View (cartoon, chains in turn blue, orange):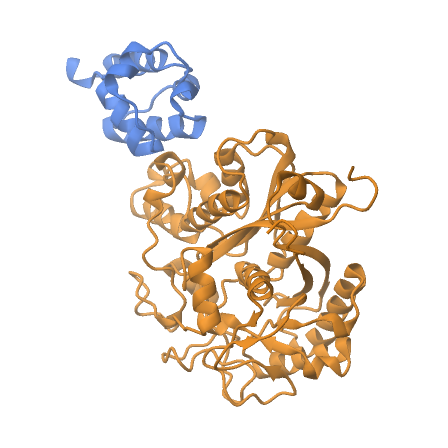
Length: 86
Length: 414
């Protein structure tokens, strides 16, 4: 079950891959309560990350996941969903 | 201070990303020397298509010029546009964060849209499924993408727009920007860039009867000759900074040219004989708006489609609109050395016109000899000349015609 946990490291890599945004995982963790737009991630970028995670885990994520405002809120929702579904 | 006379739209910045030069000075050098860079298309996936020759922008590395977050969500045509816009703003002394963001607007023209990006996402759609299509597909292919991204990237919050009126839209966008300046906007970033040389985009063009399918780069695009067999496409483009002339002088930047007059008409897709009257009307309208007599035109940058019927119509339109001066004025078509970059073609010609006036030189028409129309077409070598006023012409395959009159800046700030 723990293997489905999406980490800040992975989120950082996904932000780079899906939206071209470079953010240090450590900084992402430390500023996890800051809104995504502070890091330069727009709503389409977050939507792309949701799509990538859905493909990667073969599982639908809740519609609210693309409306999450902060990295912490997003990872909490994603991980609770993946954990429940595993 | 500016209420005493009508506002004039001055060109204060130029940025070029073209097949024959990735900077304005390199572009001008190639154009003035009459270099041709037409070549067999080398892009992956294009080799089996019957369209063989084009003007490719090679050695363009957007990653050194544009941030990743803009690159991943945009097509090559927007990469060209963003890079050219930044060059133009730097040239105008307006690079960096704008002091007055609401005083700067953006307008571009586009014809092809983001074909390469769209093809990649559609391949994911049919190859893997709808969940694999990235969300940026929703914006990257769209004609409006370059205007939006230039605005976002530069923090430019003035009036923005997109002109979708065929190839002639490149000239219409310049007119649109000039009118925005006349109405009170201080600065407009304006122009066009296209990237129509990806496989999907090329297939879209194969139905054009005007397309040259010759596989010899030196013979594929020879307008105004008996060997004319159509045109070859190109990618790239140019963006200009057009601003209130008084403001430019207050800022102490050179006024490189003034956008003086424009008119556009429509005569129907591929009805080239009818484009004669349409183009003549556009020329007359542009001269009227500029308050310019036919004899004042010192050089004409021709549309030069390369289809015999269209070439004839253009030569006759010049005679119709300019009278006897139409057969005496130097005419040139530098695009025979780089191809036609659709909406960007007349914008690149406008840049060449501004540079020709600055340098006192009419650039030649590469690959063209033995002109078979009653025109003084400049061939082989550039011709030195005192140039104060230039006329730029454009026609689109879908039937739009446009003419633009550009006057030389008076050099007071130079």
